Length: 345
Image (cartoon, rainbow, N blue to C red; front, side, top):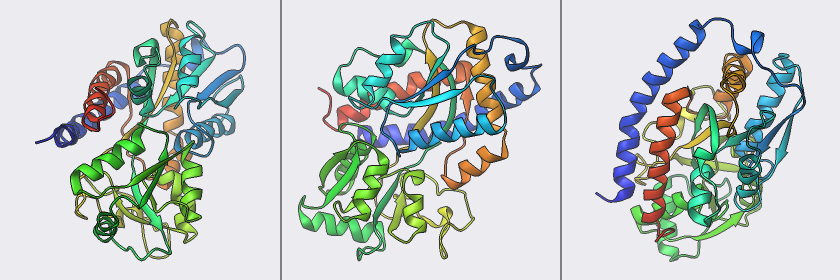
């Protein structure tokens, strides 16, 4: 069994443990006494919400949605402002918050570039430089093609890619990041070779696919749902070990739950991505607790529940030590994945 397969198997087994752990943790949080929002520390000036990625992608959309929920429900007295710092595959944003040690007025939303960027670029940053707040969800990846293409299933498309001998173009966010890891994984699992073309963000990637400038993408659901609903894109499979649970129709004929897993479709590749919130290092427990409770209150809103369904998220949520342990494992998983992909020596 190769490293990709071992990591995916371990991830699938852990999913049940994570879900149980998350349920226990959330129950404990709900039962806890009055949150820090009411009695403890709270921000005294504008909070900067850093997105270490470009505009229009999944991280950017989630950050701006969180900003809107906070404003609508008056969950903070001070403003929260979203700032995109996506240079260097997110290194710009990560180094900003690393160098803001002790500043409780900066938070960052992370994706898996929390692990891949330092490993791929050597930038002097590690997730342990930050203060973990909450895992808000895990994000799916879907294999998308243009709706005008002749491919109706992942199997048909992969056969066409294999026959093309490397001429088919896979668009993705960044180099040596999640999208390219998945692309290499598909190649190793099926023998289908792509020409990988990197872009700055998921929004741009979806636009390129609609325009026919690439042949496929592995965008997150939230990055391509508008184009799918408009009839411009077609989903072929989801890179997870189970189908997405959401049964409400997104188009006239399909719901998220109708999309087969890639494994079902003959493409044995799985990958899900972190959507987490962190603070700078060196903050106090009271400052961290403010944001832990803030994120919990956001997840309890009906707006968040709708957002999770519309974006087809895996709703696993963690804070505290369970989140820290998950991060430790995830870093080593990404090291193994990137080494297997040939991105690390």
